[in-house]
Amino acid sequence: MRANLKPGEVLQFQLPEGARLVDLFATFDEKVGGRMPANLWNRTTRSFHESIMIMVDGQQVKDPHTPLREGSSVIALLPMAGG
Image (cartoon, rainbow, N blue to C red; front, side, top):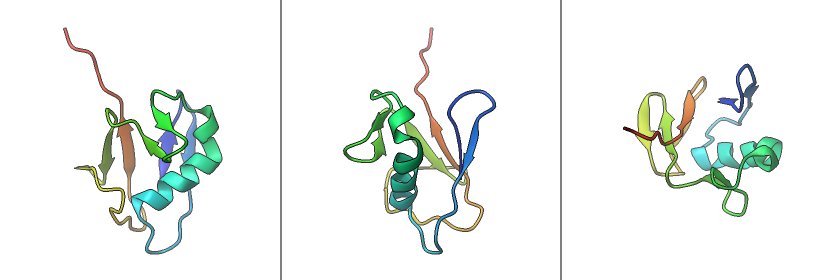
């Protein structure tokens, strides 16, 4: 999994076989949760704010128990303001 926290910064995580999205979020929290703004990341629940759209392999998911597979792409999309 790669997480772009700022331009040019990419993180990759190695997870065990059978990992789920919730496992990824726990690892993410341990590595960078403290660097995330509270309006985006909840350190207590180890999850993104409900306004953040999570995509796994190009599909929107809401279930934190969504299984991940080798090479899964996970993207957190911020809400955008329209005009």
